[in-house]
Image (cartoon, rainbow over all chains, first blue to last red; front, side, top):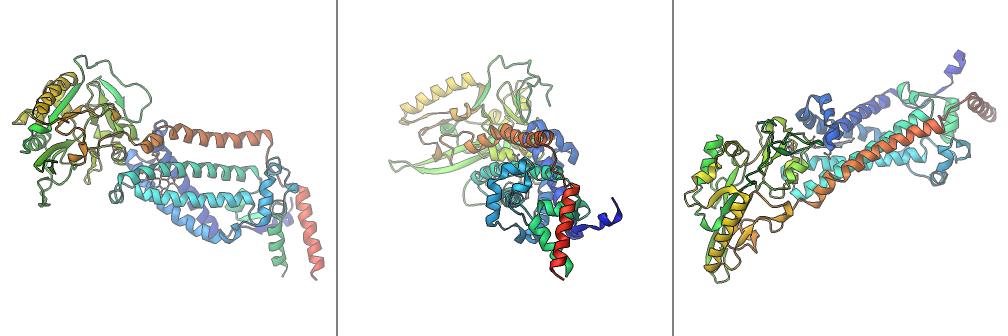
Length: 213
Length: 304
Ligand code: HEM
Ligand code: SF4
């Protein structure tokens, strides 16, 4: 690879967006570990990572607030690029082509493909569910304001949304590992022309058009 | 205390059996509270404070006899006074000593996420081991009787211990010892059921046709039982639940959702792993880069 090739890169995420993303990512990991520690006895040992059971109980909801705020900023920035379009539904119908690495058979993709968009909405729904139910079950400050029936329901909802979110993020992380060249978009902020052309052709055309002006 | 009593039949958030060589061969214990004999003197409340060294904050009068107004981390038992006008038009003062019921199937223990914060002894007593408590309040969520209270000072959960410290050395609970009318008795559950049966017979002969024992089976029976004049309407006694059981939602949350949740997480990760092994990564190769470059060049020529 010569230096000229290296220059052939497209900026996908500016530095502030990348920092924001990693705040969300790190707080998610901490939340998943501390939440799972309380979810299942077999995972209670994870509380050791946070300084014991009580510290886990104290820290978890606070980190939750950090994640919600950080994701709200990230989500607001990405909101418009995630609107579902007619071609996205066709893309979803051909999901088999995707998992079998026959991407050329799929409709063109903008900045995000339909799978990414669905993950985006799943995260939003889960975070709303987690925030609302999390406040209801937050014993130290808020639980006294709610009936025990509501607290019971919120406990179940919180665990459910937590599990769904963890599964969604596993898919998200796997996609980044599977589609080579993606991780760099969030670490260095750039992707290669070929990557953009292959995976997000409509977006590639859009941004390269802009570049020539 | 911890586990060295060797009679732990259940321990919160654990998956293996606990030391339980010592059984309750003389039978499980029970406290019987005969509401019809209670005069509301609150000597039991005082005895509880004394034995356990508890002092609740001095509150203010809330317009009824309940004092303090509710259970708290410092008040593990409380007389609840209800005025009931019976169908004959007479006033009945139903005074119920509220506190932990020591369920055979305790909702608090089921809900607690912290190993060993709640235990159940062979004799049936349900006890909190505060050194393991993390203050999450799940026990409050799980309890069908609204009993545990989290201290604002130390964020630990507290409730009646049935004087497990006294009982373990052969003494009756402090409230039992002090009750001046004999409304509270303590012994083996069997003896208490027998005693209750005699009391109920007596009450029936005095015109309380619905007198009966409160030992709700929805929670597997309790180790604190009531003799009620109106056993058909437990709600009359300051909202004693007619059919208490661990809420179905708590059952779902603490039951099937745990293995299913972990399974979902592992399955998602496993599918990803197998996909990578089986189908492999999605790579951008030199052809793609070439195609991108070609398209860019065409684009450039089109837009001079
Ligand atoms: C949005 C803000 C959030 C708040 C306010 C919040 C609050 C809480 C609270 C109060 C608890 C009870 C234990 C404790 O007091 O620490 C809890 C448990 C839990 N949280 Fe969160 N949380 C939030 C976000 C999350 C996220 C993003 C996840 C998943 C990645 C998550 C997963 C869990 C799990 C699995 C549990 C254990 C549930 C159980 O015991 O069944 N939470 N959360
Ligand atoms: S507050 Fe303490 S006793 Fe109650 S459920 Fe949480 S850890 Fe268990």
